[in-house]
Amino acid sequence: MSTSDDRKAKIAELASDIAAVFAEVIEEDKLGDVPDDSLGQLFASVVRLYAAKAQVGNPPRPFARNSGITATDVMIGCTAMLEGVNVPLFDLALWQSWSTVGKRQPEDADTADS
Image 1: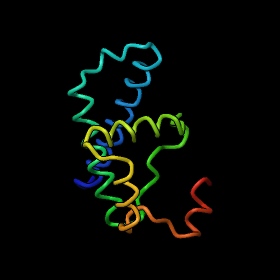
Image 2: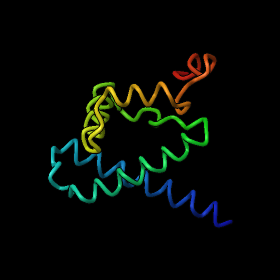
Image 3: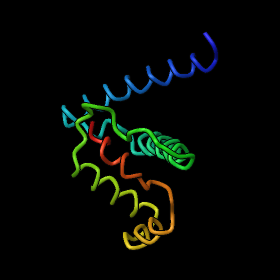
Image 4: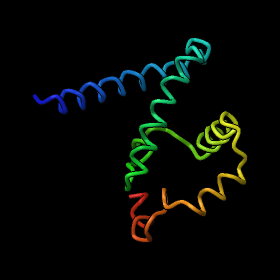
């Protein structure tokens, strides 16, 4: 197995393990069991990696199928992230109008939910 294949397998295993532990924490209402610094470190790594993929074009779906993510979860998370880096919503809208990152082609929008 190549190094790339090893890395892919390791990432898949880690992602599965973390998702299972986090689901358990949420289900059991034990949010305090996840240290804020650890969550921040993990979240920052994921956001940086996703942003890097988005910058090179055609980012993957941000959420796996059947992840249980709701629109409310996304809005709360985005709002908290913007507040965390002191960016008002207006500035995000302005940045989006100037950027090509995240702009879907019409055919992409039609297949986004398939």
